[in-house]
Image (tube, rainbow, N blue to C red):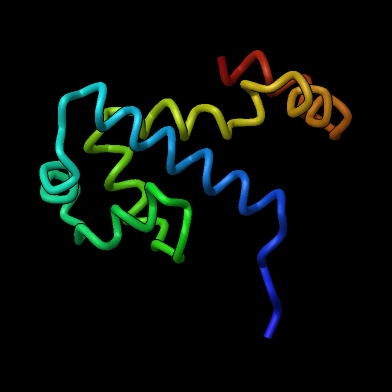
Length: 103
């Protein structure tokens, strides 16, 4: 069995969970309310907010959608929205010419 745990991964999961909890509280939602809106169990939401367990990606997206931040999270993973991603794509053949067609 391959271990996927590392200090960096543990930190990132904890930060993601804390941010989700902050968004929930800023919107005045209880954990039960958010779990219901996202159609996930309270245990799934608890694990996500605590950065523990292994929630399915569709559960994570359901919670982010219920909070109204799914599009922001997805956009942040787009290489076009990152200077490093754009630089890497500029090195690829034909990517520079496609850049102007996409935007």
